[in-house]
Amino acid sequence: AYRHRPTFSKLVLVFAASGGGLVAYADARAEVAAESPGVAPKKKVVVLGTGWAGTTFVKNIDSSSYDVQVISPRNYFAFTPLLPSVTCGTVEPRSIVEPIRKIITKKGGEIKFWEAECFKIDPENKKVYCRSDIGTNLEGNGEFLVDYDYLVIAVGARANTFNTPGVVEHCHFLKEVEDAQKIRRSVMDCFERATLPDLDEEERKRTLHFVVVGGGPTGVEFAAELHDFVSEDLAKLYPTIQDLVKITVIEHGEHILTMFDKRISKFAEEKFQRDGIELKTGFKVVKVSDKTITMENALHGESSVPYGMAVWSTGIGTRPVILDFMKQIGQGNRRALATDEWLRVRECENVCAIGDCATMSQRKVMEDIMEIFRFADKDNSGTLTVKEIQDVLEDICIRYPQVELYLKNKQMSDIVDLIKASKGDVKKEALELNIEEFKNALANVDSLVKNLPATAQVAAQQGNYLARCFNRMKDSEEKPEGPQRITKMGRHRFLPFSYKHFGQFAPLGGEQTAAQLPGDWISIGHSTQWLWYSIYASKQVSWRTRALVISDWTRRFIFGRDSSRI
Ligand code: FAD
Image 1 (cartoon, rainbow, N blue to C red):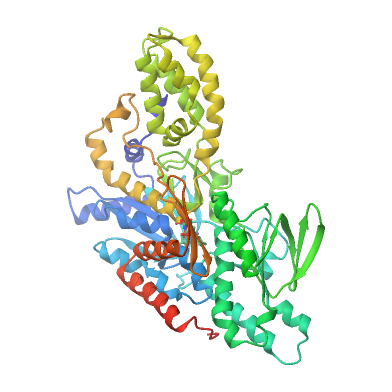
Image 2 (cartoon, rainbow, N blue to C red; image 1 turned 120 degrees about the vertical axis):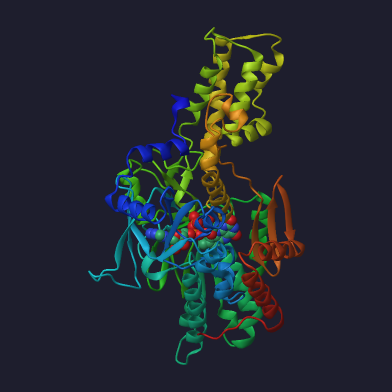
């Protein structure tokens, strides 16, 4: 059964065998075929989203082999790691965006783009339903249908409010460029409002109380940016109210930046304390009204604080179109679309999902591993040779690079020792005992594997990987033996997606940044801030944005941030 899993190329065959399915598509194919007799029409690849995942896919796909169509409600790519800098004017919004049409044009202009939102996916008929805000059709509703042969879902995620009352109405989010622009205006609103005459001290204090809900990287970076903006720029411009400004970070967990090494989390907490940023850890926000935030704490019970502006940054949730799609394909109880290691949506032909809207689900990891073990006993003798066990482990490591890491890090001693100790063959019964142990030990791996972080790094690597799979699809059909090590077991032609972590940064304000680099190498301070500058400049999507971002940083160094409320 394992060997008969569908591969990309099989999916092509399945589709071909089904005769194309759609009348509209058949018509379109006839048109194309008529235009160029003897030339097979290109497969339609529809990409939803122009974020990190979608744009990287589009940049890397061989558009001469596919009819690529991109659909997204925004016609640009945004460099999200610099969004917190936009909230305070350190960087201008237009410096971190690149029109998607520029990216497409660089690829020879073969790719089509529609500025519209997909509101429904119909996997049965291989169609996506889209709606455009900027134009109308004959029916006046701006809706249209697009057929696909392959669908790449890269719609990202939305802010998660955990259904907390009042959040949507009263809090800012920090997900999109517009959010950052709104925050920038709102900060200036608060400062201008607080200087108006006839306001009592309490009201001024409330207006200048900035609350950040969520002590993750985004919340922390925004709090740090805001602190810098206030202390470096606004304090000079609003000297009479500068002492009334207060920034509070509310975090449900016991610490902020828990996804980082403890040393970074501790450094950040101490720095915030020195900077006068109040940290309320162990507090859960339960309600937000227009002027107060109510929170709960195990020790102190419920309490409310007045605030002037709040930014909600507590993680990500699923977009409605994905929720609806997941219900259709029997994944209704999940948080994100489950894909296999080839990034194909489980139980859904010809649909791939990448980036924040997907999780590379490994719910079958144990079954797969057991199957590899069973398969290794080729002659069904009940005995596995040491060589066979080594092959098994090697194969598991290829399929699950995280297992390899786990074996290296945690020394999966039982099975490894067994192999090392055995001079000859190992009885299968003996091995099975170890398989049980192996299973238990791998319970951890399961959770390790499941939780790829929702980051730009993951999204971009997935986009790149998937584009390479598409580019090699034809090749793999012509040479179906695939990567040698995998074929030994007669399996997939493409190596599974494997994430390479290059480290992560946490800018903490005052020209100090913390970095956790591969090999758990920690670096904190001013020099790391310069590393951050150079890496973020180099990661810009084009020379234009690179130049703009660098000039924004330089402008900020020389003239400070602009406090005009435009
Ligand atoms: P996105 O980049 O969000 O793109 C989604 C795309 O889908 C968008 O173009 C959107 O318009 C489009 N879309 C939405 N709905 C639809 C629809 N219905 N139909 C069609 N298209 C649709 N990660 C890091 O690695 N390092 C960082 O420093 C970092 N900092 C961050 C700072 C902030 C403030 C934020 C918000 C995120 C940060 N991230 C960072 C996380 C990173 O931005 C995300 O993980 C990444 O954007 C995910 O990429 P994506 O392509 O899945 O989604």
